[in-house]
Image (cartoon, chains in turn cyan, brown):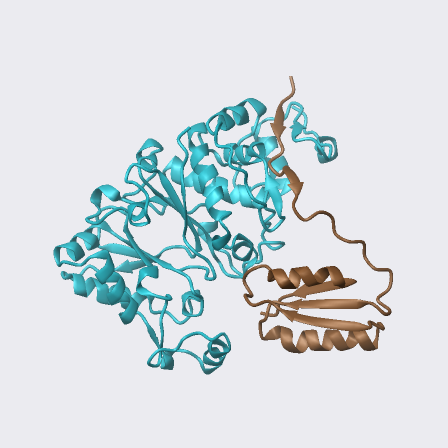
Length: 354
Length: 93
């Protein structure tokens, strides 16, 4: 086995393939690390035949892609598929990866700001509809965590695309002060089967049979533990108190937030007659932050930004409807708060079934 | 046998073209400064503007502030750039 030097491996400027010589998987990963193409984990070789199989899954999806920030280049399908291969995806995941890429390229998502910011945000990917079961996306126990190929590699594939095509190199164009573990992969599905309410994508105007991915740049999930409350109002008291944080971007950015209820909390709330709308209204009012919990300097800064101060409080979202509520997870008395980057929106895109 | 892999960083085209050539001198030139609008930019860019005029002979320094510090510059500011000889963009967290 010979290790080919980087200079020998550098592709010509206008070619898209690289000759690896007789490099093996470990040498390839080291080469990818040296090129800055990895998130720190080994990456799979994106050989031409495998990339071609991925591209075959999206033939017919010809909608052009806009330029990708921060490098402002138009991605090729080949490069996106190569990154999905490198991330460890199966070929059948690629339509979901492409839809997720389209979601973060929606102008309201503010991809440039979310990648170049000092904030710790990562692209959260939420899947709804049949694609969850078709691809085995975890919507239940440990849905934000490790252990499922689709969650791990679809989320990772998007991050590698943003790194290698978009150019969001940590410390260079990705200026996050501390980053977040969510930057490796942040992908889950709604537990529609155990939700007492309509699925999230249906409430956004899609059909129940549509497969949809929703993306928003956000922090990693913050756990909300409530084992003692046996009433819906008790659980909402804990949720409102947990998310009422002066240090989250929500306090000064007009952005939606996500509340992901565990199925047990959801059942208690539903039993007590809470609807999505009544929960949004209750949490909107009870999570507002009183002035005395905000530093004088921040108060001045928010005043300069014309941030509304209502009855001596800052609200976390522009309105109750910007509190997005859905159900995910397995057994247990836990829910999660997902604070946003800010200056952004939750962008939903249908996953094409070719 | 040799393995061929695809370059994961290739793209169709750059959307914004190539950067303009650097000016040889700033003497008599117009320089735009685009601030992200955060507090730290106020004193720094004011001082930088004075240095450009007093020390480097810049004819005019134009200050612009983005309306949203977490998004790209507003289209009217981007449109103005074509009238400048050089532009400095920065943040002041």
